[in-house]
Image (cartoon, rainbow, N blue to C red; front, side, top):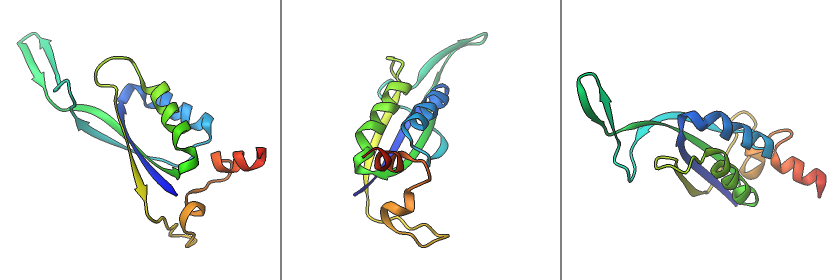
Length: 127
C-alpha cells in the first residue's frame, strides 16, 4: 500500500530534512512554501514602533508518496532532522494513496513512485 506524507516544517530545517531523506534513499518529493499557525497562535515581534502579532508564520510543506514499508523510517528521519524542541517545529500527516500513475510511462502503483537508487531499490539489493 502507498502512503502520502505531508510534513509541515520550519524553513530553516529544510536543508537538514532533505539531507536526512536523501541519506535514507528518499528521492522524490515536492516542496511548497506555506504559511500557518499552530498551538502557539503565531508570535509577537518587537520593533522600533512597538510590538505586533504575526499570526501566520512561513513554513515549508514536503509531500512524499512512498510504500508503507518505508513510512516509519521516513517519519523518523523528518522528526530527527526537523526538531528544535521548541513550539512551531511542525506536524506530519499521513494519508492513504489509492492510486498513482506516472504520466510519461503509464506505470501504476508502487512502480510509478520508484526511482533508480531509491530506498526500495536499496532494500531489494540488500535483501
